Length: 219
Image (cartoon, rainbow, N blue to C red; front, side):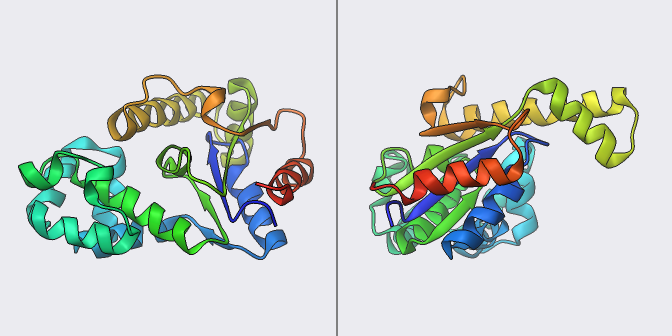
């Protein structure tokens, strides 16, 4: 086995979740998505739904922060979960106390905890960014053209094209904002990943085979 962790980022309606589930099954790995939210919530001592909402909606951060521990207490939790000092994530956090970066620290700590255990396929939560330059991690982007994704959303949801366009535009905007807010990435690039798969033409089975071939190659 080459890689012990596969991170799959995906745009809406590109089929990334399906690919991730199939890859996890074929490799015998754990499939991790919402578990990241649950782990972060446990570390922050809040309800998972608050973390899930706050990932996408900045105003809810304050509600989360009000229930969090102090920065010093959190430093111990993150270090315990990841084996890495909190300074490796946010150098100023331990010194300055709780601030708006706390949620990002919790999410990243949860991702590192899962990756540290190995044998996992992590889908979403920008895990590819959190685990950049981490040994044994294969970072994959599953995407498709805007037109293809609009068509898929319209067909699956049985909605008119205008509504499908709105949903895709909203999802893409939130994705950009997430990368900017949590990882200071102003523009997502192909070079952020080891493998980029376009499902405009490739079937799910073909996409899965490509990822499996890369994952099984020597890391």
